[in-house]
Each structure stands twice: as C-alpha cells, then as structure tokens.
Length: 227
Image 1 (cartoon, rainbow, N blue to C red):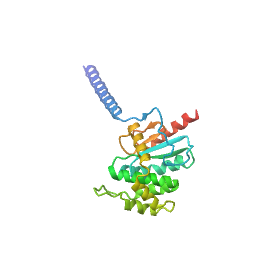
Image 2: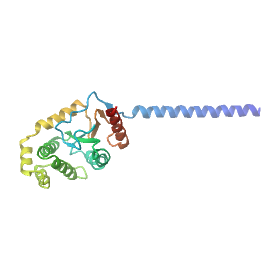
Image 3: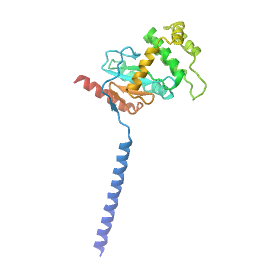
Image 4: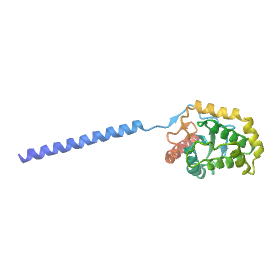
C-alpha cells in the first residue's frame, strides 16, 4: 500500500511538472510571437546627397529616419548616436545618415528645410545646427509652436560656419523643398511608421534603442561586406 501511495505521489509530481513546462512553453511562444523582428528590405536606402556623418566610403550606412519635433529622436541622438560615433564612426567603419521624416506638420517642415539649407552650406556646420536644434527641443510637450523662423535664425547665428541670413532666406523661399520631398518619398518607400527608425544598410531594426542588437546587425553587415 505504501509503495502504491509513493507511486501515486510520483505520478502527481511528474504530471504537475509536465503541466508547468507546457505553460512555460506556451508563454515563451506567445512572447516570441509578439516580439517585433528586424525587417530586411530588397535594397538599402540611397544615401547620396543626404546629410552624413563619418566616412562616405564606410562599409556600413546607419540610416536614421528622424524628426526634430520627436522627443524620442532627441533621446536617441543624445544616447545612441554618441555610442555609435565612438564605436564605429570615428574609425571609419560606419557612417550615420540623417533622413528628415515629417510626422509633426508645419514645424517639422520648417526644421527640415532649415537642416537641408544648413547641409547645403557646410557639412560640419550642419551637424552643429542639428545638435543645437535638438538642444532647443522643449523638455516637456507643449502645444505652443517652438520651431519658428526666429529660433532658426538664432541657432544659425550661433554656428560660425553658417550664414544665418542665407539659411533663413532658403527656409522662407522653401529652396530645399525638393530634398525634403525626396526624404518623405523614402519614408513612404521603406514604410517608416514612427521616428526614430534606424536601418543598417538594408535592415530595418525593430527597436532603434536596443544598442546590443544594433551592434549585432552592424557586425553581421561587416561580415557580409568582407565575405
């Protein structure tokens, strides 16, 4: 009788363990199924003529679709950009490309026109203007427009490499609207749904803030380029 009870308890224990394992497998499958995956596109976005930081001949292009009105883009620029710069851009392994992605209406357009005007004047001046524009983004969301011609003029005047008068004239005349429209064409072509979105050559990352995965994708791209 004691032996039968022991066998019964053993069967109950194994059944409980088996049930727990099944539940764990179901949970893992659900998590995996709901986890976004990187997307590989047929071709990498063309980067010729786009604002680019680093060596234009680098093997890896890190393409950043961003909007100066996007608070998450500012966070990415402050925290991910410097790590990529130190880890891959400064040694010529990769470059970083900026694509204007207008998701916030008229202010996004003004900021994008200004950035294109800055790039046309001076490439180093563009990145100083780019940094300053993010620095001026309000810490908290506000319904009040903060990207104005006056602010753009103030920022341009703070960058010695730029002609502030020429930049504002280009903004008001929408001189570089074709370049902004080309950026938005790429946003549509690559089905960019949010900013920031980051591509490494032809791979669109599921999470632009996952630095470890970003490094993995860059390293795979370097391996492919070397093979």
